[in-house]
Amino acid sequence: MHFDENKPLDIVLNDLFDHYRANVSDVNKITQALLDKGVIGSQEDIVNDHIAFRTLGVPHLGIKSFEKIFLAFGYKKRDYYHFEGKKLDAYWFSPPQEGYPRIFVSELRVKDLSVKAQEVIHKYTAHITADPVDDIDLENGQEVADFLQRPLWDLPTAVDYQLLLDESEYAAWVIYNRYYLNHYTISIHELKDGYNSLEEFNSFLSSIGVKLNNSGGVIKTSDDGLLRQSSTVSALYEATFSDDKTLEIAGSYVEFAERSVLPEFKNLAKGDVRGIHRRDGFETNNADKIFESTYTTQIKGS
Ligand code: OOG
Ligand code: NI
Image (cartoon, rainbow, N blue to C red):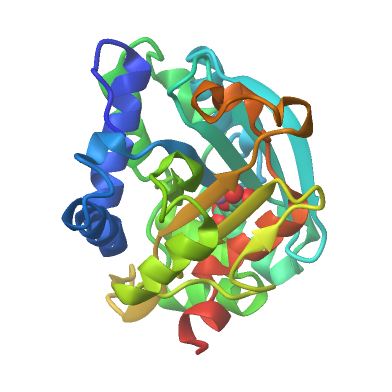
């Protein structure tokens, strides 16, 4: 995915992707292998199904604040999802026009954590008393792009990070990684024959040594059978904390989605099938397992 940069949204998406790609080595590794095999002719041939962000459910930092950016770019807020065990809420947002990715934004239910964990989160975020996005010009793409790379709170100490990690892997991820892009998603059904089913694509990924999240099975399938997803597990990165301690922690990952044609369009000729004819949205049970792509249990498990 790469946009022409004639709109603020294009600038933002390109900038997010450039930072993400520079940090997550699986992104270029997969693109390069697809180029080498002739599956794609250039990086732009990859269709990005969606991107995802994580937020903290405290005043001025949750979805209600973060979403202002993408609502201003014409995205529409869609379904709500709840993840009981992980103490998360999420929404997805549909793009202003075809060719742009969906957006999945989740939020930690901070009030549902232990008092100790809440205290740690408040220690870093209590100074934020207005929506930080209100200070930026949402018509200026570069300003928005810079905002999404700018830390809104101080780096945590290793002790605080560890305390959060013991209770919520998601909390620990956000306190260190903040609003950085959590993943982008390759649309598998858009690829050529031999690569356009998740089974085929996942065997290609294994052949190039990419490790997949196996929580709930490698392929996660929606109840209607029409949305199937897989994802890599994050690599470990050496992170430096505010007390100069270092720990190996999770970063971002890559996802793969196969959206099937809806039953009412099943008689369409293959060449006539467009995005609108396929299963849209997300699925709670798939997402619940995909979150674990940054969890120690997946990264350190076999
Ligand atoms: C998001 C996990 C859910 C999906 O496509 O259902 C997800 C996350 O890890 O923040 O990406
Ligand atoms: Ni996703």
